[in-house]
Image 1 (cartoon, rainbow, N blue to C red):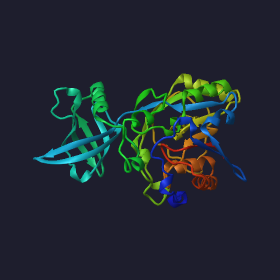
Image 2: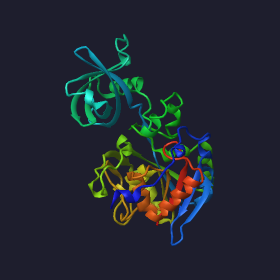
Image 3: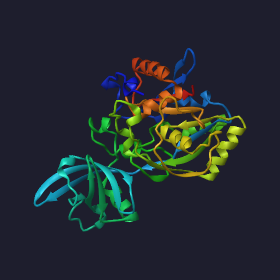
Image 4: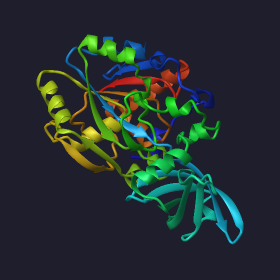
Length: 357
């Protein structure tokens, strides 16, 4: 499909730079496709009333690591500041990373992150550029395993999306705000942002409604922010992300579906993982592996009945996904309504609840 089919005009003032407080006070656009799509305004706090007893919410419990690093490259006394966003772990000591300015790095260069010259080794983090491809490099750190994890946590900052980071620096509140309340498994370098809206109070209301909660893990990569630069979607290459679905979760979801319950993915990451694992009949097995699934209109969904998700960038793989789920024309109408009605977009923005076309 032509990429420009997924374009739309978004005023800059619709991009949320800070989250709503409290989290569940955000607005939520409810979209029910059909011959005449039903588009209505609600609040995230209304979610329990929009679901039925026996429905299942599926959350991605990945935990964002402070993967944004600032370092210094010293080449024969010439020092350059390097901004680095880790996005994929390769082994115990190596990460793939997006860097800028990439032109100042070559294989073999050394980069010093953290507190150089500190007597405390936890404040130091050094790496060598092992490989370079355009604006992406492989960094081989001097530390490995848990020691490397601790050092990254000490030296790094929350990796805010580019459309926020370009307009304000990360602050201490982002360490809390850019993390779901149920985050459990370290490894993401971008938040599963649909889940940022949930609070303990909302969980209690869902419990009272008889809506169950289930957790999967997909370590979100920074590739989720990459724009689609090709003219045709078939030429776009997705970055792979690692995920897992436990046997317990798979059995619970299959049983709920057999009992007439619906499966609602909280976020496109949960949806992509479940659809990657699902069998043709819609059953979900236990699953572990990498997925680079790219969902565009024409895809036949197997496992998901509804999707809770934030508002996405024009021409992005995520807007393509929601267009596949609810219909391209329906989503253009929904986004037109959201823009005209003052909804806040992107990671810290408002939410939507989409039912499958």
